[in-house]
Length: 113
Image (tube, rainbow, N blue to C red):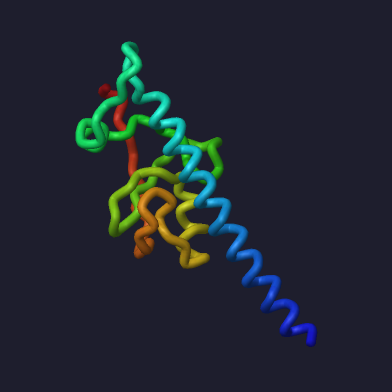
C-alpha cells in the first residue's frame, strides 16, 4: 500500500513539474510578445522575431545564474550548467522547445561584444 502511494506521489510530482514548465513557457511567450511590440503599437511579424537570436542571458529555470550551457540536440542556450544537469538527470525536455535533452555542453563567453 505504501509503495503504491509513493508511486502516485511521484507521478503527481512529475505532473506538477510539467505544469510549472508549461506555465513558465507561457509567461515567457507573453513577455516576449509584449516586448516585441513596436512603439507605434504594431507587432513584429513571427518571421522577423524568429530570425533574431535571443539576448536573455539568465537561466530559465533558476533565474539567478547566467545561461552558460547549450542543450544537445536542440541547441538552445537557456539554462545554467547545474539546472541543465538536473533536467537531464530527470529525463526532462528542453524548456523552450520540449525536445529531449541528450547532453549538456558548457559554454564560455568572451568579453568581445
